[in-house]
Length: 371
Ligand code: SF4
Image (cartoon, rainbow, N blue to C red; front, top):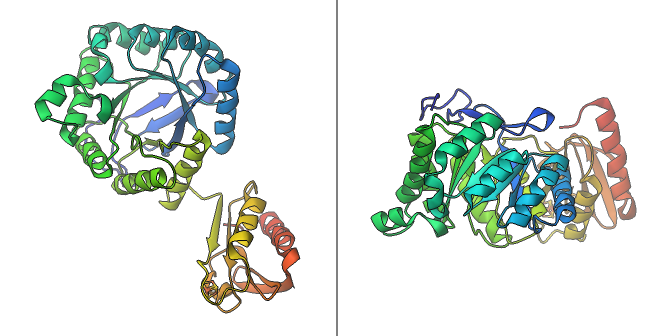
């Protein structure tokens, strides 16, 4: 591929080629120095166009940048043109067994296609045609290897889904496309075990210059799934490895998007929209800290400016401990001491804490001195 692998850019990102998922205003760059993007996958039957578009709209509102839809049947393939046309974010068709759906997805205007080398023996002799169609439509292909459906040849060679087996499967499939001059690829090698997954991506990062889609597969329900994904992504992203992420959860996909965004924010790869700095509570607590924190979170969830809000459970350490917050409250004894940029500005009854915080947040936003 055109970029030499294994180099790290000045920003600490692994040097890789940049691909573009989608066209025009909906295009999302992946790789190179593009910001790490967050994606998810719909859970509705793709053939149910209205339900799928509704879920895509919810994902888009939550901050999802790329969405994937499964295409297991002809009815699903038939729904792709309407979904691709009406989605506000790029739509990737996820195809496991049927090469003909790849052509359908490209014709439908999908932004990219994901194929699984383990499930697509039939694909190998179709690669030339797929590469030609995808190149003509400027549609990138994601080679998505999964531990659970690893190519039988590699399973036999390695005995199980080792990091080497996962990486080798992806690189083999990539080589088939390269033979036809097609490099518009990104790669994923997912495993449910965090350290196996991490090792597989580390091998790939050294061996190729394609953008990498990170994911821990079958990560489970939250919080386990979020924790496993966070652990894996943090190790990799800290090394500059990873260009787009999906947190796989046994939960509504909007939860995947929220978790993905939070991971990028906590690693400093994205400016947080809202950061709640809240104390864990201790024997000095004089209020229902969990309830107050939830109220603050709900009040500022859609605040249009980045904000760091502190919620402290007593007046002893409040403003001091949360000096770096834009504003906050130290609550206790039925009152809330409101502070802005570390200085106490007023004390209000507990019932007025939220409205007072909102008032000060608005003035901070107007004066342009938020986070
Ligand atoms: Fe305890 Fe107060 Fe610190 Fe919260 S802010 S942990 S209640 S001392």
